[in-house]
Length: 132
Image (tube, rainbow, N blue to C red; front, side, top):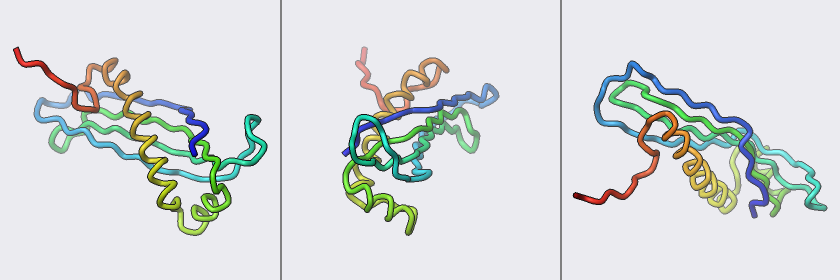
């Protein structure tokens, strides 16, 4: 179970020299490391899962913009198994990975929408449109 989600850094940039065209938006979540950690809110240790999440805007073969969030997720179930799995093959157990990735997508894309708006980019999710 996820008991903490922390963004430690956010970097965003827009390439002003990009020519117009069809914009493609791609997401790249990545687990960087996993380790045991102690936090005051719990008696037992948790797995601290460091991540990066990149939203990349491309037009043709040009990089138009990029938003990168980095941080960590705190997981408090089967901590030993999660850490051991990462240490053995740099993968999370399948059920844990599903929860982590779903949360990463949900939270990071939500946070990227505001950043995209600030940079004058289309939101990184489809938005409903009302036809006139």
